[in-house]
Amino acid sequence: MQNTIGGLGEFALITRVTSQFPTTDDVILGPGDDAAVVAAPDGRTVATTDLLVEGRHFRREWSTARDVGHRAVAQNFADIAAMGARPTGLLIGFAAPSDLPVAWAEEFTAGVRDECAVAGGAVVGGDMVGSDTLTIAVTALGDLQGRAPVRRDGARPGDVVAYTGHLGLSAAGLALLERGIDGPAECLSEHRRPSPPYARGVEAARLGATAMLDVSDGLVQDLGHVCRAGGVRIDLDSAALRPDPALLEAVAVLGAEGPGAAAEAAVALMVAGGEDHALVAAFPPGTALPGHWHRIGSVTDPAAGTPGGGGAGDENPVTVDGRAPRNRGWDHFREG
Image (cartoon, rainbow, N blue to C red; front, side, top):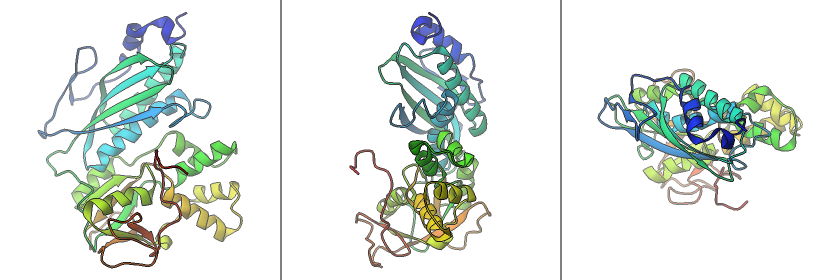
């Protein structure tokens, strides 16, 4: 039966899906040979890789195949943007059970294609294999266009911390799905199809960002990497964390009662929730930031201890209003 990928066969499926991918000027030789050839005009290539495992990163009862395709591109090209680079290419490994419908694979391909159209970049190759668990492995490539990469270790005391994109919406969307509750479409959509602000990574690099990353595991968790890499602390200002109206609506639906409780719950999701793939960066003091960059804190000296906090080598180098937050974010191997 050719309505499943097992019935269609590996090579027919490869031909069917790769024919949907457009090319770009960065692709010298795309899918179809033993390896791809991608231009590197800068002389350097930014590279990152990530996995999506069914039941761990997505559920087919919650997300369509097209959703998963969008997510596969977004979470990888967000890492490219976080280095201050422009997305150029993707290699996709696709491991799936043989009874997976061909229509699912085609819709996944459409999601990948459409997100590439937003982010830039193109699929240049990959691999397919049979597997009991649907698993997607993506390697993303990017171009620095002559700039230095924005690393995690450059933040210095006095720098301003700011973010752009969404915070907390994806975590709220996940909570709604887990409880089977209908809620704001913006939250559900952001969980299923994150919308990283790709172009603002390059913008941050041009503005002189000293450190940057995308928020995949929670704001506090991810900023902790900046602290440890640079030997600094970061203190966030909860008053500057202004929840999106959709986030406030979602936490109310989830059970937070009263404006004060809703605001507190929303800020907690902004601080500890992940997978929105917003960009957060440190900038030198006095940097004139565009309005879509929201100042939320500052980089401080690790010697200037604050109650409940910790130095750069401690477990909680990031504080909120001078105190360690109750929830730091996501860790795949940390219990609880």
